[in-house]
Amino acid sequence: MEKQQSRRGFLKQCAQFGGDCCALLACSRGLPAMEGPEEKQERKQKPIDFSKLSYCGFPCTQACELYKATLENDAKMKQSLYDKWGWKEKFGIDYDPEKVFCHTCKPGDKPMKVGMAECAIRKCAMANGMEACVQCKNLAACDKEYWKKWPDLLEFNKQNQARYLAEPGAALREVKAAR
Image (cartoon, rainbow, N blue to C red; front, side, top):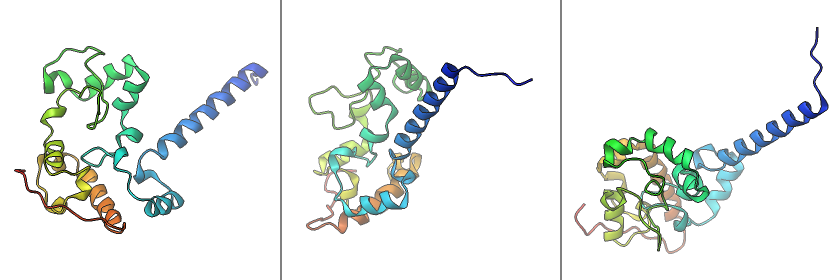
């Protein structure tokens, strides 16, 4: 015997499905690796917007869960990320939604998140006057521990660096400060 669905139930399911599809589309456009051929071509033609990249080249404003949770002041998501990323073990702090946040590593007048001041990538880029590692002449040979942990991000940066070099006036910078 078939179960008859009410019109209201059907509409609710359709709305949920539509919302899920929108979320999926929004997420798929967040990371360059998930772009379709048209988006990749469009991105190749646009100059790199360093304001949307962290010093390590990650597109925080588009893809970071903690950045999104911070903007939305989502305490549940912050708690989940605190646990997932092991902040208690890494930084020795107890969970407090006021301490678990991120305004990217270029926070301007906003506070820096826990551990940001110790980031070797951030320190190096800032000491050498770079907006992102994409501008570094030594990127391909960089042996910082960070890249061992995030090799896909290093590869993404190498691709972005090639794109950056195709821009008029682009020039790689030599690392002068201690690495």
